[in-house]
Image (cartoon, rainbow, N blue to C red; front, top):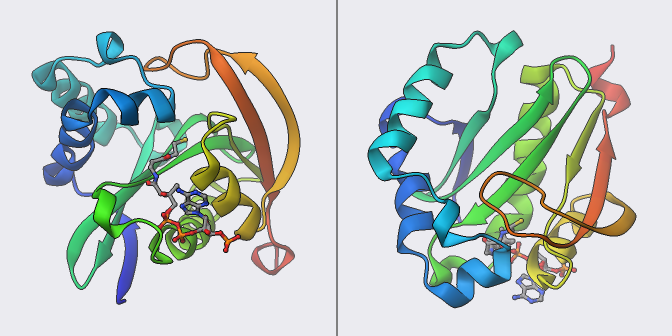
Length: 176
Ligand SMILES: CC(C)(COP(=O)(O)OP(=O)(O)OC[C@H]1O[C@@H](n2cnc3c(N)ncnc32)[C@H](O)[C@@H]1OP(=O)(O)O)[C@@H](O)C(=O)NCCC(=O)NCCS
């Protein structure tokens, strides 16, 4: 494994768009996403065009690419960003056969560091579907603390579902 986690280039956003549009129904169900709520590909690209022009201090979403041996294998995004305060993160290894090999766990640790640095965060949250074991296990392993389980519509792509809320605080080493 030769993992790199870095900010996503605008030319790479199809990694996200294709992943959601190509996901089979059982996968969307597992991750709590409603296919009907996915933006059309061209509308989604147009939205990201706007986002990439926003300064970091006012970004609606910050996207990261996960690469293994220089090939994109996944991505993370942060949204609900209050710069200097907090944000929510998402985590996806895009190819099913690349999951459960240790990639996601390490990629999440590195993504967390990048979000804390770039967005000057104090806290970072993640709210996966409560029945989706993989992200829940991964977050715990990466140092997130479990807060609660509740029912909500966690984002614009999601249906109403039980989610577990996890949080990680800014490491002291970044404060100096
Ligand atoms: C969540 C995800 C990014 C984790 O990445 P990964 O490469 O599969 O995870 P790793 O191999 O690093 O494993 C991390 C931990 O999760 C556990 N895990 C991974 N897949 C699992 C599964 N399907 N069922 C139960 N546990 C699982 C591992 O055993 C490991 O646990 P440990 O650290 O306690 O030993 C990846 O599984 C994924 O993309 N899943 C589909 C998308 C998704 O569910 N995203 C979350 C939406 S909110």
